[in-house]
Image (cartoon, rainbow, N blue to C red; front, side):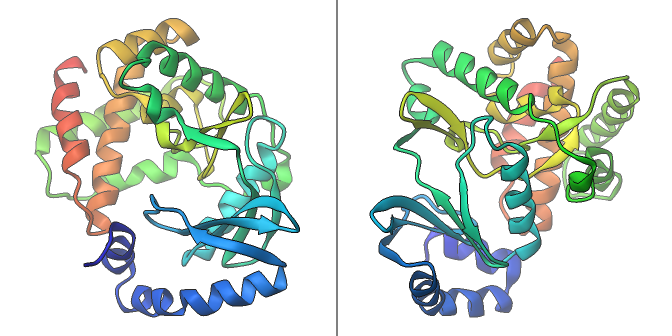
Length: 278
């Protein structure tokens, strides 16, 4: 039976993805010899990249393989910008692979959600705030897309309720006109991308987009009412703007899922809950 990772790769990349999957064992073998890696074992929860844990000269590492070289290079650049602000160290890389320090114990913030929701909210906000303290040199500016450009996809025709698209376009245009400082954003800061490293919480898998920090909060919102209220208080953001950005980002996620032949039902459900709030 095909796992989620394999299905995602085939849905997005088709035959090219199938050929890449078939080459993975040989690629891992070649990289392990080049970078002196041992004890490599796949991580169970992979979705879009092939990720393994192992050791390099006795030190724990993570090896990440990607079919999308452009996206991987963007992640590497983002990790370098965020270096010292709560992300794992880049140990080595090439166009298809990334070697990182392994965060130990590596528990995801998701494990806090059932019984420690308030603590999870605080931690997510703290991690985001720390990341946004990083500044990037002009040399990196062209490495990352602008949120304004990514949101143009909302102008296309999509098989989703028309009122959602109309509302998302209207909110996008208003929000982007608001004067706000742009920062390098993680762009995918959900609870499974925030891991415990010793006694600190670190962010993994940054995608790297330039935009307003308030738009970053959407990824760790689960309860559209209570979470947005807490985030607004923590950052002193207008509550209505938090919810508006959340809705816009949900519709963007739906469009991207449809574009990649993935099921957008999770985001559609959240959009349905959020629509009356915006």
